[in-house]
Amino acid sequence: MAQRSTTLQRLKALGPVFTGTLAGEVFYKDFHNRRQVAAYVGLAPSPWRSGQTNREQGISKAGNPRARAKAIELAWLWLEHQPDSALSRWFHARTGQGRGRIRRIAIVALARKLIVALWRFLTTGLVPEGAVLKAAV
Image (cartoon, rainbow, N blue to C red):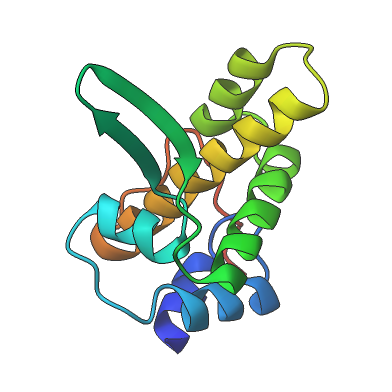
């Protein structure tokens, strides 16, 4: 977990306390795919299908509540510290000048995308597109 925490700290916007919490709550497990990561955090979609009716009911919230709260907090921090990343640009394109409810819904979607991107960063070394790494000291 210490190695994963140190790896996450290479990204701007992630400090030692935050990465320690993420490593201890989420990334201590080995996941096989992005759906498992999102489901564990409680950010997986929950569709409802009956006959010809197909509806999205939002996120399932069946996962780890502490991890979900940290993921959403991280999404807000990501927008502030990584404004030129592809994820931040996606969020701003989706919300535009919208306020309130629209931004709260979109931030949950961003949190899911960000957790998956961090999982990929830890497992494959693939830096999220446009993300800035901290300068090595």
